[in-house]
Image (cartoon, rainbow, N blue to C red; front, top):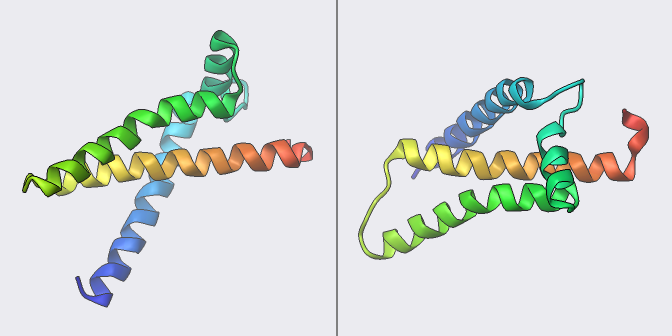
Amino acid sequence: MTEFEFDQMVNDTCDSIKKILVKKGKEYRRNENVFHNFEEAARKKQISREVALDFMALKHEISIDDMTKDLDKGILPTEAIIEEKFGDAINYLIIKKAMFLDKINPKRK
């Protein structure tokens, strides 16, 4: 991969992440609560919303782990699968960052 290709991949990834977070954010929020689904899962399981997010993100982490193991066996994922799985993992990290910021500075609401 060249420097140009790497820079382009970074830019493309950031653009894709923004689009997905905005689209999915509108789909999953309720009553202007961007963390609605995570808070509902937390309430149902009597855990924090951050832990609920961790459980939801775990399937993406496991998928990436499996893809890594497959690489060692010579099994290559498609670019579409790479985009999907890494995009999902990045999105969950961004949402978790927002949750942390929300906890330490609740006046943002």
